[in-house]
Image (tube, rainbow, N blue to C red; front, top):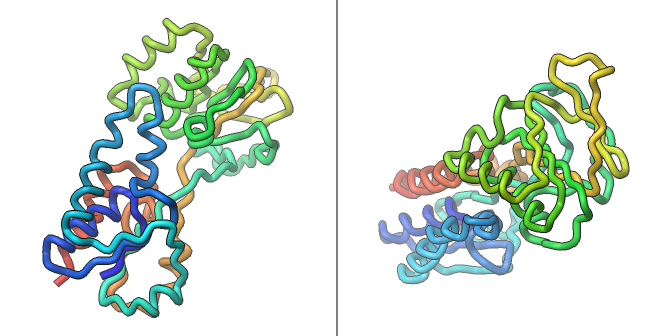
Amino acid sequence: MLVVGGGPGGMEAARIAALKGHKVTLCEASAELGGMLNVARRAPHSAGFGDIAIWLEAEIYRLGVDVRLNTYVEPEDIMAEAADHVIVATGSLPRMDARQHSFPSHAVPGTDQAHVVSAIDVLRQPRDWGQTAVVLDTVGDYEGLAAVEALLAKGMAVRLVTPSAAIGDKNERTWPAYERFIQMGGFEEVTRHHLVEIQKGDVLVRPHLGAPQLTRVIPADVVVLVTPNQPLRALFEALAGTQKNLTLIGDARQPRDMLHAIWEGHAAARGIG
C-alpha cells in the first residue's frame, strides 16, 4: 500500500493499514511529517496542535512504515511502485485570489502584489510587515485569529475584515482570543464587509448592502488573505482510471479541518480488505 502525503490524514491511513498487517510506504514531499499542523502549531497559544502529529509519526515508525521524506511523487512513480492500494493525501494550498462567498462573481483587483500574503506566510516567515495590516477572513477559524494575533504581537494596527456578523465564528477559542486582541491594542473588527480592491498601501472595503459611497479606505502595509484553500488533487486526477484501488482523502478531497482528514484516513485504510 502507498500513501502520498504525510499530513495527519496520510499518517493515520498509514498507521491503520500497518496495524492491519499491510506493507505500507508513505511518501512526503517536504522534509518533515505533519503537513499544515507544522504551521498551525506556530500560531500563538497553539503549540498543542502538533501533539497528534508527533504521536502519529512515532506510531508509524514504530509499526515499520517505510517513510520517504523529500519525495515528490509523479504518476509514473506510483505506477512503478505497483502498490495494490494508493491513498492520495496531498493536502491544499491558499488560493490567494481573495474570492469571497458573499460576492462570488467579484474578482478583487490587486491580489498579485507583493504585500498580499497568506496566513501561512505570516506564521511561517515572521518578518517586519510594516505598521498596518488588514486580514480578510472568510473562513472564521483559527487561521484568521492566529494571523491577527501574530501581527498584533509585532505592535501593528490590525483590522480583521469578515463577511460574518462576528469574528472567528467557527472557532471555540474566539472569545479568549478577542479579549487578548483588545488588551494588546491596535485591533479593530470590520464585520459584514467585503473586500473591494487592494491598492498599494491600503484596501477598499464596503458593507454587504452598502452603496459605493460607503466604501471605506483602510491603510494596509500588508494584506493577509484567509479564504478557503485550493485542493491539491492533480496527482489523483492523473491517476484516475489507471489505478484500481485509488482513494482521495483530507484537504485534497475538500479543504476542511484536521478531524475530517484523520477520519477519512482512518476510514480509507480500514476499508482495505
